[in-house]
Image (tube, rainbow, N blue to C red; front, side, top):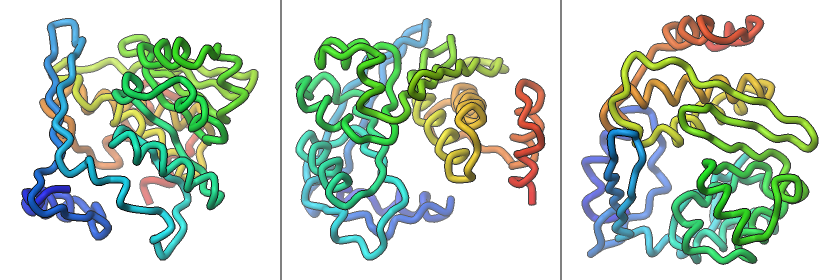
Length: 249
């Protein structure tokens, strides 16, 4: 992060986010993402990397405690190659989500870092790019990753696990305000379910509801909800078989 991170750090800390491992790069500003959105919620992204260009100076090997899961999301290309390699070396499961950086990565790089990943997350457009660049079909990709998750906007999401697949429908929104961050919200909800040991279908459904909360607010981090409110809304659309009761304790 850059030298302008102080105010944002305070905001994250106030939300219970651990920022202790954030490394400040003097003389740089924090990376910035700008989304241009049309009335159909299609987006064009512009990006200023800033301090993110220094990401590869960090190492998982320097952590005191081995993480349960590493999320490899868009960052400097050299960092996106380094962290999967370290995960494979250290035996740490990782989620590979190249997202906007698919355009900058070569097919052999994408194929290499999918190999052995616990999860591959992408939207349907990114899946097409990955398939074209690597020459791999969906079935072939499932020979490289354990679980493939493809989000499809208004058409929901599909989870692929070996020969099995699960379709996750969208949750009806109260209104569409801003799609920026919806994919990240889905992933966050999915991983919250994963952290609680829920089955993949339930993880996807939690992600679907988390995504719609983001869609209904302007900006990717302004939405919020109480656990009881979330579970109540969830049960209007999905059947968790009582498993979410554990979130209310």
